[in-house]
Amino acid sequence: MKPGRPSRTAQWVAFARAYATLDPPEDRICDDPIAAAYLSAPERALLLASRLPPVRAAAARESTRSPFTGSWLYPAVRTAFIDRALLRRVGEGLDQLVLLGAGFDSRAERFAGDLAGVRIFELDFPATQARKLAVRPAAQNVTYLPMDLAREPFADRLLAAGFDPAKRTVFLWEGVVYFLTREQVGAVLDGLRRLLSPGGTVLLDYGLAAPRMGVVDQALLAVSLAVTRLLGEPVQTRFAEDEVAPLFGGHGFTIADRAEVGELWRRHLRGRYAGTKLIPFWGCLELTAR
Ligand SMILES: C[S@@+](CC[C@H](N)C(=O)[O-])C[C@H]1O[C@@H](n2cnc3c(N)ncnc32)[C@H](O)[C@@H]1O
Image 1 (spheres, protein in one colour):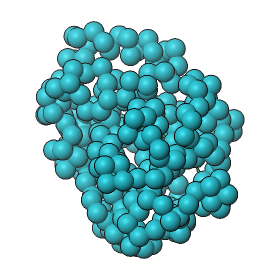
Image 2 (spheres, rainbow, N blue to C red):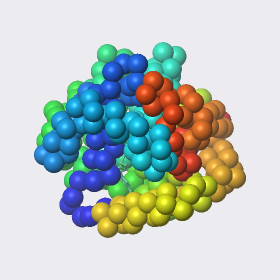
Image 3 (spheres, rainbow, N blue to C red):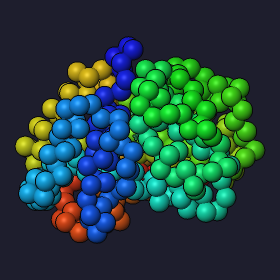
Image 4 (cartoon, protein in one colour):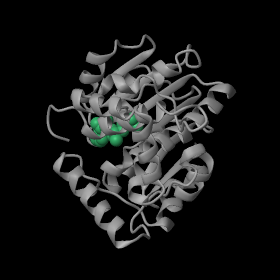
């Protein structure tokens, strides 16, 4: 992260959600009408241009040709995965929601009705939180905790802010694992287990190493990983497929749901996106504390 600068990757994924939200309901992957508020002026201009039906049709066609171009839909897909699981937990009864690396996640606003009465905590670097709060007013039931969760004792900070481990809780850890080292991921999992009672939930996504795909897509993926380094938010951790279950199913958690690209595609892409190709790079998990 560049010191004092809001997260650029948080902005990218807000763009992806804003873009997806413009689709008609039969194609729409996720619905985030707040996301556009966080975009820069050039991103807003791009979003405006993407409203034009020929532009959207061409982009959708292109996403069925190459896994690399199809992959710009991924942030919307993971949001759909997490939204569905979160709303199911809300239906079962929820007291607390914690967003680790919240970025420009707008769920506190998007689901204000469903989350009324739920205490929400949002953690992220100070500059990203400051930008978020400069764009939209703070939500009443949200406690904002600016911090580096990989280096500060986030569990202690949450407890000091009134987090109650005895209450029914969901943690969201969306789009963040990539940016931590393996050791930091393990330490966060230990912190989460300390904070959750049995039955508590963690929803997260992660990156896979060595996706199988053509040379051109491999090269494009390498370029995008290099861009994240230039932006000061390098992808640090990608897992082999057989590492995922022992790591995330360890630390006192059970894997309640695991969906990687093929399964995510089957569940969440429809209409004009049904034929989209995605790089087999991502996976989403629902963990339950034992
Ligand atoms: C790709 S963005 C995802 C944001 C949000 N969860 C979403 O899905 O829209 C990654 C976020 O993680 C935050 N982040 C990464 N490493 C972090 C750390 N060590 N401590 C706090 N926040 C971190 C970044 O600032 C950024 O907001």
